[in-house]
Image (cartoon, rainbow, N blue to C red; front, side, top):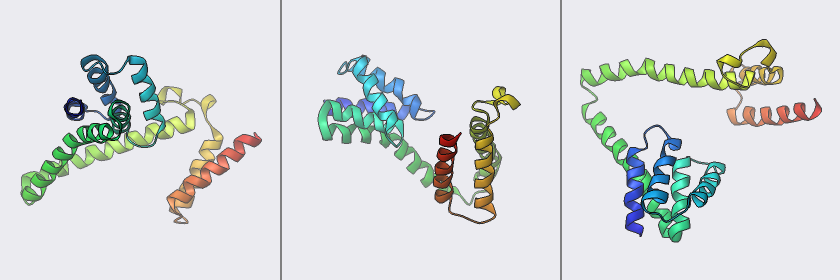
Length: 186
């Protein structure tokens, strides 16, 4: 059983491109459909628990499925199977980078990727900001949906971080406390 679980989660780890949520259908296919060791209702319950706990959802799901099916050894085997492919790929890429980093072709490729990475980070930041300030995406960004409390907290947090060089954790915690108090009063 442990060997079947290990190879199932190796496949999940290898083919779940696109983040942790992309792994859930693969885990479901392996556990519910192929191995048939869990019902869909049991799997759904485990995914719900995995979503509520901190950490990557794919690893949490693998750990919970392994624990449910084979206890602590199952948790270790499933988690290892889920993480091992990404670890090996990253290790291989790091080796290739350190071996060939002085070549101009590698530097050219990395230089070309930097603007794309900045654009992806900016896109994610803009999406989060729109979600916070308008409770939705670009389509919901209307004056009627503008959230003034969130805007005030954003501006205050930005000033605290940039002007006063406060610790980011303190700003996050303080924003949470102030926001909670404001929403309790209003």
